[in-house]
Image 1 (cartoon, rainbow, N blue to C red):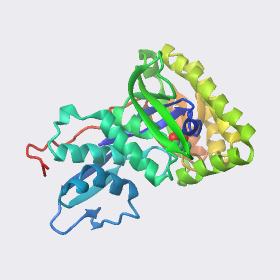
Image 2 (image 1 turned 120 degrees about the vertical axis):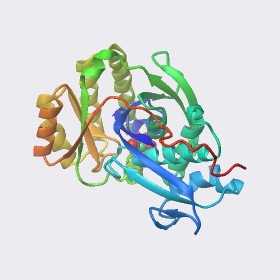
Image 3 (image 1 turned 45 degrees about the horizontal axis):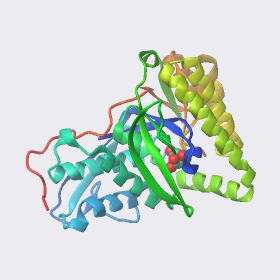
Image 4 (image 1 turned 180 degrees about the horizontal axis):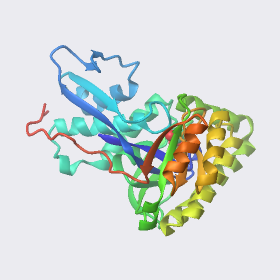
Length: 332
Ligand code: MEV
């Protein structure tokens, strides 16, 4: 299983090499696998690689290209689907870890950077090459992750990811932030609009805007600056400053055209009882988040504005094997 995630700061800008911070949340995706007697299947149906391009990419890389036998796959999720909470990244991460374990990797020795890399490449293939490693890193490593185009002093460096995006080679350095105790007093209330947030469509919308109006790149850079201020605030455990950085990110994302009326209404409703609020993920539907020490009051406000809510602390355990197999399903 692997957790979903919320982006605290830096969505969209991270696709262009700016920094971003995401936290794993207390809602997980579980992927169960067993040997099939009748060919590849997913959730009881014949596997269709066009419907599940992520899963197809991972099964090729980690299993079938080496001659692994067909599997029955079952996916269950505590997350709102297609909502910007990283459910596809969590599926990728959990499936990759499951396949490695099924080939004999010890559950206590899962290679996190390898799993995150495989999951990121699968996401990128499904998003026309435009995917940052934010979601896949948060669901693999858990806790809070800080993605940057350079190695940072403010966090523990974990691994490097690179990818060609729109003809430009992008490199991301993936770090983990150890959250101070004061952050544990706060919660994220996640409000789902009830409408999916179409990630690749929204990422393309921003790409088109920047192609048309290259000067808009300054807003992408500004999101990067706010993210850096947010990281300092996180390291200090300064909840007010974290909230201010979230509010500023929301304003900038509105400017890029990725928010909408539902998200804006829920953000407004959350603000009186929270430290900060913003859309999270790709936008265009999907979810918003509010940072609050009064999760019940904030949840009620978001529900009154039409959202479905989920409450989580900031950070949750990363990918893990839930059921340990003594005998590998298959060993090449
Ligand atoms: C999606 O959760 C976040 C985006 O920044 C896309 C990405 O990072 O791949 C919009």
